[in-house]
Amino acid sequence: MSQFDDREKAAESQYSHSKEVEFKATARRNKLLGVWAAGLMGLEGEAIDAYARQVVESDFEEVGDDDVLRKVKGDLDEKGCDQSDHQVRRQMDDLMVTALAQVKSEI
Image 1 (tube, rainbow, N blue to C red):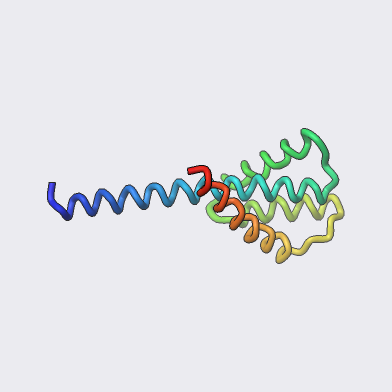
Image 2: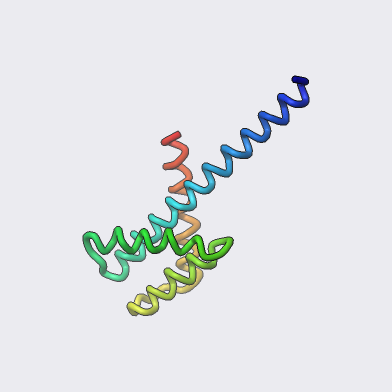
């Protein structure tokens, strides 16, 4: 195997690892977002975990974060919780930082 092949394989491996970390962090962020939103909506006990799972699952509807934002914002609006799109998006961004740190510390 040539040096070029070795470098290519290393780059592919690094890319794959990076994508795996990103996927895990996004799922963790969505779970944390679900817990945050559940608290605002007054959910308790197992209902918090169930709602967090729903938020994680909502991310599989389309590419990007809009499906998660739509789910959480819609549920907050339905429960009369006053949170703007910007506030929810900001919470998503803040929780992504937390989720990335958590996932990286577990690897």
